[in-house]
Image (cartoon, rainbow, N blue to C red):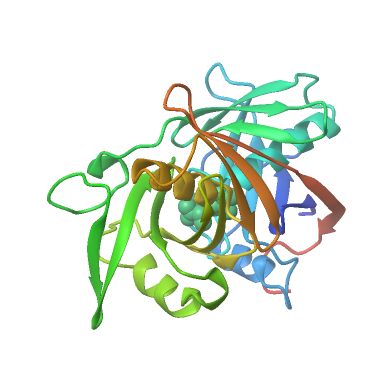
Length: 284
Ligand SMILES: N[C@@H](CCC[C@H](N)C(=O)O)C(=O)O
């Protein structure tokens, strides 16, 4: 079976997007076997992507259903950069003419707004601090926790944004131990569904630098939900203002949260090319 796809990225966090409206995909199971997803995610043997995004008809009263798979084949319920690409894709493909699009995810609804300057603002919903909502094992909710891994202890904040995040402060993101501490904490037993690990450098109250080791994909050039997580964790500790510029390896996001509505994340969404996969077995 041929499978049409579109390659997109949000600040270098890259995606293979499948249109499950004009081509037939399984309604509930994975669109491809986990082996095929891992193969296609590979940058040498496949298309290369951090996440696979699926556009599907809604089951409830939203405009679309938005499904996300990591490069390791695991299905997850949030991807902020992907949400911006999702909005750009459904508009450019003429699947909607709305500027404000409601999508249904495995974790509830989100609103995506295409702005006149060509950017997309995603309302990520409120940050979730309750331990069972992250999910995270600790004795009580706190601004920071000590996580012991191997011989070391790490001071982290933990928050859910539709997916689990932990965030630690570092002096300098350029020298932060992302490749070593990232995978160590990603599968820490206190995060029963694993976790995305953010390394945040404070520049000033309205500017941070950030690197994220993503659950199921490794370090990416940008992580939208990770940017929101870092900002709300910094705000909770009294370190950041309501609006923060987040500098990532792939570019800059603007995150706004004033405690009233959800966390608003604004940034670009880019289409790279369209393609067709002739062999979806993953063995090509
Ligand atoms: N790149 C994303 C997050 C994708 C999902 C994440 N790896 C997870 O497993 O939760 C973003 O932009 O938010």
